Amino acid sequence: MDGAALERTMGNAKEEKKIGNEKEETESVEEKEDTGVVTIEVTRPEIHVGLFGAVAFGVGTMIGSGIFISPTGTLRATGSVGMSLVIWTVCGGIAMLIGLVYAELGSMIPQSGGDFNFIRKGLGDLLAFQSVWCLPLFNNTASMAVLSTVFADYLLAWIFGSCKPPVLMSKLIAVVVLLSIGIFNTYSARVGAYIQKISTVAKVAALVIVIIGGLVYVFQGETQYFQNSLEGTATDVQSYSIAIYSCYFAYGGFSRIVDIGDEIVNPRRNIPRAVVISISLVTILYVLTNISFFALLSKQEMLSSSAVGYDWALKCIKPAAFLITLGVLLSVYGANNGAAFGASRVMFAAARVGHYPEVMSYLNIDTSVPVISLFVLHSLSLLFLLVPGDIFVLIHMLSFVGAFLNLLATISLLRLRYVRRNQAKEEDEFQSPLLVPVACLLACLFLVVTPFVSEPKIEFLYGLSIIIAGFIVFIVFVRFQFKVPGIDTVTCFLQLFCNIAPTAKVD
Image (spheres, one colour):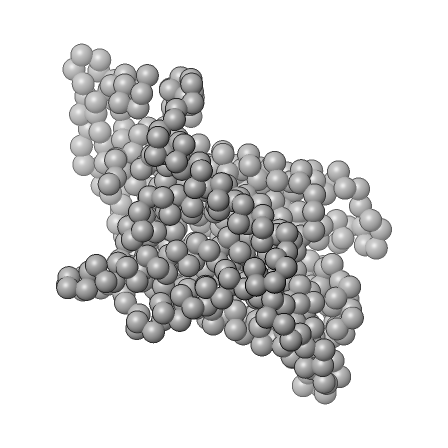
C-alpha cells in the first residue's frame, strides 16, 4: 500500500489550517460519501513564533555547552590568552557573515527546512541531500548526545563534588534528558517554544553573573593572567583552523532560526532581525565571559579544567557556585531542546520531497507536530550516547561538516542572486550587500580546506567520509529509488498508531 492508497483508505477530506497573528482559521473539510471517513491533511506546522520567540530560539540554540567547553579547546589550539580572545571575536564575525547569508535565504525562501530548502533551490537535490544526511543524522544527534552528557556531568559534579560519580549514572541521566525533551516536543510545538524562552532567559542570566563577577576582579586590578597575553601564540595555519572549529562549536545554532521559517510570524521581516540580534548578543556575551574566565583562572588551570564554569564559580562565588551549575544545566537543556525542535523540522521538509521515508512528513492531526521525525532523531541520539571518545574530536568533526554545509548554502545564495538578477524583489525581502556572501564564501573555504593542508587529523577524515557516504546513499535510495521491503506496511501502522496524516505535496 503506497502513500496514495493510504490517503484513499483514510478518506478524501482535507482540512487546511492557516494561523496568523495567533488566530486559527479552518477552511474546509470534505467527506467521501462511500466511506464517510475524514482524513485531515495538514499543509504546514502551526505559526506561533514571533520576533522574541525567534531571538530566544537563536540565542537558546547557540548558548549551550559550548561556552563552558570551547574555551579550553580554543586556548589549547591558539597557545595564548590574547589570541584566544581574538579567535572568539573573529568567530563572532564569521557567524554574523554566515548568519546574514542565512537571513537572506530565509527571507527569500521563508519555509521550514533550513539548509535543505536553500541548497535545493540553488544547487539541486544531490547537494541538498547532504544537509539532511549530515545535519540531522550525524551533527544534530551527536551534538544532542554530547549536550546530554555535559548536563549529566555538571549535575553529578554538583552532587558528588570532587568524588567521581559512576559512569552508568551519568549515562542514565543523559538518557532521561533526551527522553524528556522528546516527550515535550512531541506533546506540543508550543511547549518546546516555551521551554526555549525560559531556558534562554535563565542561561543569559547565568552568563551575566559570570561576566559581572569577572569584570569586578578586572576593575579591582586583578589582571595578572592577562600579562604577556600573546606569549606562546601558535604560528601554523592548521592550529588556527582547529581553534576556530573549537570556538565555532559554541556559535553553532544561529542558522536554526531559519529551520522553523514556516512557524515564524512575518518571516521575511523577523528572520533577518532575529539572526542579527541573536548573533550580536551572543558574541558580546561570549567575549566578556572569556575575559571573566581568564580574570580568575590561569592558563594552566584553564587547560586542565573539564568544567571551566564550575571551577570559575568555586574561585569567585564559592558559596553560590550552585547558581552557575544551575545556569549550565538550563543552558544545556535549552540548547538540546532547540536542536531537537529545529532538526525534526529539517527531516519533515526533506521527507516531503522524497529524501526521507514519506511517513516522516506526516504531522499529528491534533498538534501539527512531526512525530516520526522526532522519534527517529531521539533514537539516534540515544545510540550516540553509547559511543566513547574525546569530546573535541567530535566537536571538530561536527564543525567541519557544518562549515561544508555553510559553504554550499553560500554558493546557493550567490547562484540564486544571479538567476534572479532581473526579477523584482518582494517589498519586504531582505538582501545584504554583495560583499557579505563573498566574504562568507572565502571564510567557509578557509575552514573546509585548511584542515587538509598538512597531516589532516582523524576527525576531519571522519567528516569527509560522512559527506562521501551521503552521495552514495542519495544515488541508491533517492536517484534510483530503491525501496526497503515492507516499508508501506510500516507506514500504514505508524499512521494509525500515531494519529498522523499526510501533508500537502511541495515542489
